[in-house]
Image (tube, rainbow, N blue to C red):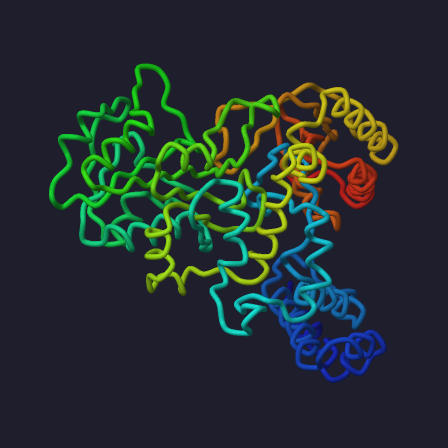
Length: 477
């Protein structure tokens, strides 16, 4: 584009004041602060100026320097700045505990009961009988000890924090014995040896990656040893020529030598998963019954509650942990404690748990119900997205979030392909739709796993597909 034409277009750009004086901006100013609206208009004008100055192919013209064009861009920026980024999404990936989508879905009854009460003050850290200050973890200790058989309990903000504070409180400056096959790396590349180093404890590795014997632990114990740590492989499996020492044998050894036994269960099962047709996962109660002194786990995996690190065990150890200086840094807020307590109430009744807890409801959805839901979704998408090829398939989903990593959940899928649109682009458009539909890609198709959908979400997904069909042509080459 000639320099003279660029200068002419730049001169025709309306001023910021004129744009703010228009009727469109007046509506925005009635709802939003003037500095925010002005900033969005100014950004739209600045972007247009840069495009004109860098335009060498004549793409910018008189139609781009109108108030309507500029304000349309400003409106997009205003919407981006005023809409919450943390918002509802539809999970069609089939991963029940999807870390990126918030892990466990809270039970509807829990959410409803919290909504009203969180609008006011709550009894977070006060004793109603005496009116005096009390510890906030007492709000959930009663239900955790009831469900696990532990003497005491406390909660921190995640299981990595639980690991660090337990080691810092019980083993700082001392040695902690761990099998080499249990030196795990958790999400975000946090490795157990690194967490242990930050706690002040000294790692002592024993055994081999695939096989560790009781004699390995026995040989490693010294006067500097504080505790033995067992890490349950809830997010990985070592198969083949393997051996690990049973928990009861580790407990017997630890207690015979005056040491504490810390059991990191990770996923935090409170009930036997075999009743849901899944492999048995060691429960927190089983670990306590076996004699573990402290047991730690996540609150937002198999407990399906808020993010947290649950610490249960012998009173003398839990008290030391709760009084450690890190307890304040790692403490949880009222929302976490309220959601955790009310979710844990469901574990008193297995039938109610399956009926009301989304995680366990998804786990136990019968195959015939999944097939019917998939067929209903396919039938709803077909007319909304006439160019698409829609197919119901058999497939597998996963529990997710490092829980039962080897277990596949048979399910029904709805596969979508659109001529001229690559699967990655189609999946992106569904994510960017107002319904924020997250799917996965398999065999060059976008697939939606109905295990993580509800019947009420079926029409919402179909409507999203319709909007994607209307608003999106073939992806750019």
